[in-house]
Length: 215
Length: 215
Image 1: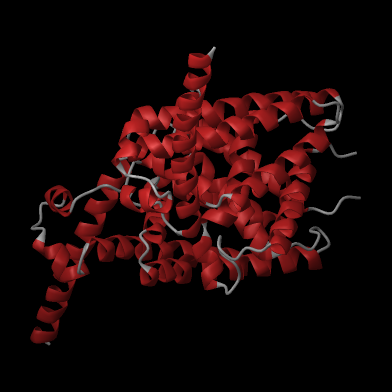
Image 2 (image 1 turned 180 degrees about the horizontal axis):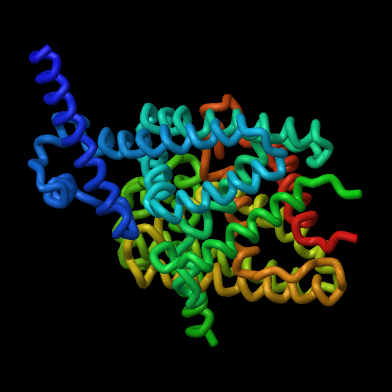
C-alpha cells in the first residue's frame, strides 16, 4: 500500500510538472500576438528548467500539440454533451456558436496555434490537429443538421460546408486583428466582453436565419 | 523626344523586371502549402539575379507586400465598381461573395500571405495590409448594407461584424486545409471547380438568408 501511494505521489508530481509547463505556455501565448515564444521563456514563466520540456514533450512542437490536445479533450467533451442533450437543434447550434466564440475569447492563442501547427509543414502534427478537432466537430455538425431537418426547422445543408463557414466566421474576428487596429475598433487583445457578446448574437442570427426553413 | 522615348523604354524594363519577380513569387507560392519561400528560389524561377529583389523591394517582406498591393489594387477596383453599379444590394452581395471565393481559389496563397504578413509582428506591414484591404472593404460593406436597408431587403447589421463573419466564412475553406485532409475531402490544392461553386452557393444562401428581412 505504501509503495502504491508513493508511486501515485510520483505520478502526480510528473503530471503537475507537465501541467505547469502547459499552463506557463498558455499564459505566455495569451499575452503575445504571435506564437513566437522560446522554450527558455516558457521555462522561466513556469519556474522550471527548460530541459524538462524536452523530457516531457520532446520539443516545442510536442509541447504546443500537448497544449492543443488538452484543450481539445475538454472542448470536444462539452460538444458531445451538447449534442446528446434533449434540446431542439436550433438551440444546440446557438449554444455551440457561443461556445466557440467564448473559447477563442478565453484563449485567444488557440486558433493562432492551430494555424501555426498546420502551417508548420509537419504533416503528422497537422493530421493530429485534424483528428482532435475537426473529426469530432464534423460528426457533431452532421448530427445537429440531421436533427434540425427532422424537426422541420433547418433546410438540408452540407455539414462540411456549415463547418467551414461557421468556424471561419467565429475565428476571423480574433484572427484578423489587423482589421481592428485599422478601424480603431478592436483586436484580439481588446475585444471586450460587450463586443464579444454582440458578435455572438450576430453570428447566431446570421447562421440560424441562414439555415432555417422559410414559411 | 528621343530621350523621352528612351527613358520610357528604361522605365518599362524596370517595371517588367519588378513584375517578373512578382509573377515568379506568385507562381512559387501557389505551388506550396506555406509561405516558406527563399529569395534564391524566387530569383531562380524568374530567371533573374536575387540581388534584383533587394534592389526593387528591399527585402522579402517588401516583395511580399508588393505582391499583396498589386492584388489589392485590382481587387478593390472591382469592388468599387460593383458598389457603384445599378443593382439591388442583394445582387451586389452575391457577386461579392463569389468574387472573394474565386479570388482565393485563383490565388490560394493570398490569405496565407495576408496572415503571414500580419503575424510577422512587423507593425508597419501589418498596418499596410489593413489600409489596402480592410479599409476599402469595410467602406464597401457599409454602403451595401445601407442600400439593402433602404431597399427594404436587409435588416440593419453592423457592417464590421458582417465583414468578419463573411470574409471568415470565405477564407476558412482554403485556410483550414487540414480539415480536408482528415475528412478525405478537399484542401486548397484539390478544391476543384465544382466544390468551389457549391461552396459559393452555400455562403451566398447562408449570408443572404441571414441578412434578409423575414415576412
